Amino acid sequence: MSLKMTLDDLRIFLRDHFGQVAEDLEILDVSPMHLVLRGLVDDKHLRPGGTVSGPTMFLLADVGFYLAILAMIGPKALAVTTNCSIDFMRKPVADANLRAEARILKLGRVLAVGDVLIYSEGEEAPVARASLTYSIPPDR
Amino acid sequence: MSLKMTLDDLRIFLRDHFGQVAEDLEILDVSPMHLVLRGLVDDKHLRPGGTVSGPTMFLLADVGFYLAILAMIGPKALAVTTNCSIDFMRKPVADANLRAEARILKLGRVLAVGDVLIYSEGEEAPVARASLTYSIPPDR
Amino acid sequence: MSLKMTLDDLRIFLRDHFGQVAEDLEILDVSPMHLVLRGLVDDKHLRPGGTVSGPTMFLLADVGFYLAILAMIGPKALAVTTNCSIDFMRKPVADANLRAEARILKLGRVLAVGDVLIYSEGEEAPVARASLTYSIPPDR
Amino acid sequence: MSLKMTLDDLRIFLRDHFGQVAEDLEILDVSPMHLVLRGLVDDKHLRPGGTVSGPTMFLLADVGFYLAILAMIGPKALAVTTNCSIDFMRKPVADANLRAEARILKLGRVLAVGDVLIYSEGEEAPVARASLTYSIPPDR
Image 1 (cartoon, rainbow over the protein chains, first blue to last red):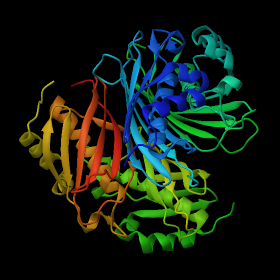
Image 2: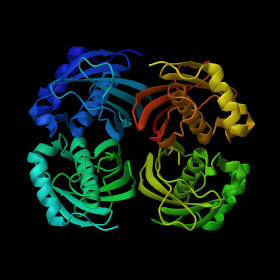
Image 3: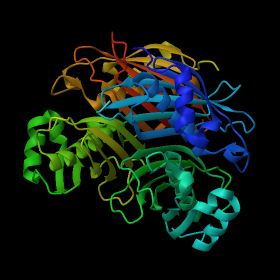
């Protein structure tokens, strides 16, 4: 399977369709069935105690996996999340950006399934692991 | 089991500890092992197409279940989410607030487990269902 | 929404399609979007320490939710599990049967979503909670 | 981190503690934080249509991850599954054994988190993906 969108295509799509959210996200790499997304962390993403908030990590996993799917099926698809399960394993580093590594395990006719590992940049052990299922509309 | 925090206690806690997020949340009801939280929806929570964003629903489920736990164990506990699994079932109504009904199914010594149903206010069928596990620190 | 299969229809279907497994299962009740299934527990379901095995509870949740769907859409459907997430919350009583209460939260065109609470019979607190998603083939 | 149990230690433990289930399981490989387990498939694991049953795959994921933990913390631990979430992605091949590759992503003081990929032997694409959380008792 080959890519239907290049890194540049995806960056333009992100900027055009994700509004303010796009400012905090940076697509680092894409290859068939894989995508790496950076989440820029600033004060608005932090919780008391200096930890990155859960919704911030949810967003990163969700958008990272969504873009990995679009890279494979093209920009027209209106895929929607049907399930996201996140294990929060370690406290993220407060003054480090996040790095999400998304992989697609199944790209079916109606469902895409995969997972995302999230790291504080510079650390070896992941802070969170997400499994996601997307529903892909039949009209693609 | 009885409540260690009243509705008013919880509202003050929310305002004092959740900063800007608290502005969009309103605790409607609390009883042993149950809590109802309203999420005020405005433009910043919407995605193209007029649907409420996933992170907005994640936040509502997570905070709703967290407050349900605090109501039972008191405000000092430093509980953290270890897992959250959300099924997105229907498109939320764009111009309606959300209502999250949290219930605790197990309140153990180290883990609390439960689920949250999320509705667009005025609708009968839930838009999302979340299962959550919280880790409760031993020093409580 | 009304039932397409009665309690008797479902019992016959279970006996005819689930072979040996059916001997340990008993459908207690069905109503629109709900079904109650008993799991008969004997030595082959136990683990050292006298607890009911995880796969036994998985089977009960999975079959219970499957039958709840069939009750609504009829016996011809070839629905398959796409996700099952189980929280094991308490140790089941070794010498008690299990009772699974399944409810459908969404019965869509291609996906059905719901959850199952599992109890040791005679106990008030659930031993496990499962969320399930089934894929429903288009040809129904 | 180094192994506290060798491949032989684990095989003896499996035979001694898992009774009949052990006959269908074969530990192929162990290394720090990883373990590979083969599931021998015969008629009793099949469903109508020739597919391997869900509980069979649940068992394989659960035991595989459990053994991966024991390899790291030693045979005395009484770890129990608190959550298992499985995505069933493809129909397993009926006349092939299964291969489960377990990895531990977090081995904490009270919780271990990881995932398992399950393959039909000889196939490249996984048939299922499981996330698991185990609770580790404090007395280890």
